[in-house]
Image (cartoon, rainbow over all chains, first blue to last red):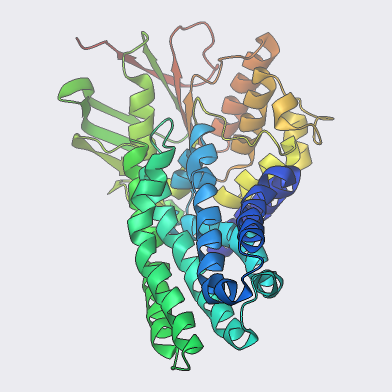
Length: 223
Length: 214
């Protein structure tokens, strides 16, 4: 029962994404814009640029994730889909998890795939690239899961706008600190494993707890 | 539990069920049962709490007092999910997906009877030829019919129909009645809310009249 429901939801989300591919591209384009503007603004100072490259990349990815957060459950709440999710013979948390991971795979993953190119644009030292990719792979799903909880909390509001960002940012800060920290450590020739392990631990916790919290929030919001 | 042991128990029973919003009682306390092969017609004026009652029975809202039993046992969420199919005011259709794709998703979510194909169900509700039409292009009545197709495919024995006649033309009303009749003949049951008695299905019917509480 759980797998057919997950498959149906995944297929639906991918179809919807394809129908509205222009909208779906917006977060990625936003991240690209930020990175290109940074590269242009500091273009003559490659030394400075390469120092801040990993931070800029991370902030761009984080902000583009925030941009699409509000749409995670809003559409489904407005047309009654969430009601049907709650009535389905599978746990609501499972559907929330599938939806969130689909969201991650369609917003953050493309950016990670193109991260080597973007890093080149920012003159990121090549030695730091593997650590950066690893931190993105561990950190961005964590951001999506934390964001899902916030999006679920605000789903009952007509317009949440900046509120989503205000609620999500404090949760995002530790992720950013550990990710940027691990890349900075590798830049100084230290072992980046500490920060990455913290991210991995956070991701495991969030994979289990965030869908449960988001499901509870959705139930409250739709009351 | 084998079906034979639970067949004599009412499919759904409510005992002393009441619901309050901000300390103002919306309905209740209500006592009623719905057996297999019968329909419960819930009548009442606007604001009498018909929709709220259905949402409580579906498990979308938590009752303040009283109990809902399914086949003689207190309703748990999984038992509810496999027993109840809910047709509410919101159609749960995605505007950018075609009618068939919407149906495919909803059936994937809820499970379905495999004796009927999706296309067949769409033909039953009079939507043959609209399989590839986007949901945004369908009229309100056609969207209702698409929701009815989902219900038709649902394996759940108890239908909770909230104003199923809304937006439907005369032939559509006839269709709802035919579907309820066939569903009851197969051993199902239905709860139907309506604000008038203009269109009751021609089946064994109990009546529950709800008064507006001031």
